[in-house]
Image 1 (spheres, one colour):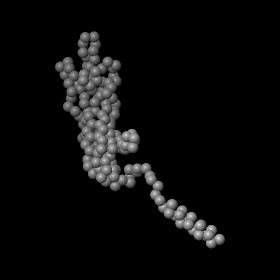
Image 2 (image 1 turned 60 degrees about the vertical axis):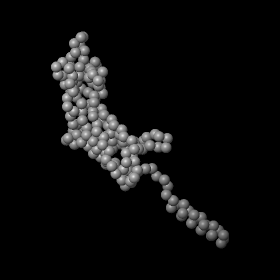
Image 3 (image 1 turned 45 degrees about the horizontal axis):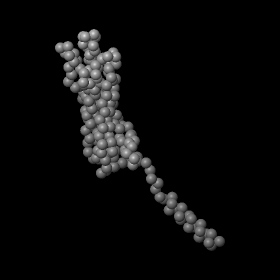
Image 4 (image 1 turned 30 degrees about the vertical axis):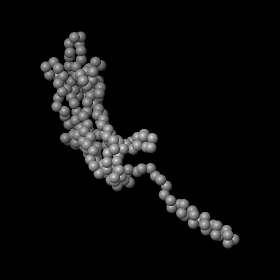
Amino acid sequence: MKKTFIFAAVIAVASMFASCEKEPTALELENLNGKITVAGFVTMRTWKEKDDMLQENAQSAVKNQKVDILYGTKDKDGNYSYQEFSATTNGEGYYTLELPVAVGQNVDRIKAQVKIFLEKATVAQYQDGTETKFMTTDAWYQALVTKDDQPAGQTTAIDLVLVPVELTSQANLKIPGVID
């Protein structure tokens, strides 16, 4: 009986120590104690017709627009997983966002991106026989910037310039050097 009691006491003490061990957990961004600031300016390129040619307008600020910020973490095989955050540009086209990161560490990859559809966004050209004609068109605009190994405690500047990636009002519209 005495041996059974001692054996039970040893098992009880061992189980207490085993239950106190912490199990590894996944990285939880809200538990990190440092930060990195992502800030930038969002502008858009558009064109107008001038003297039977396309001429680029001055870049204009994109106001009150959502900017997607992707926080990338690389695994041991070099593959990235992302957590999405967002910021909104102010009335002057600026945005800023603070991301959590462990003090003294780097964020493996940060991506900032915007994709929007705008009606009557820009002027484009098309060929009508031998004649070049111009029309105002709807367009999909996009910008994506990626930065790797960004350190904690600093500001990463990511300016985005939206350019048209697809003109939708007519099939054969072009902006030479941008959409050919």
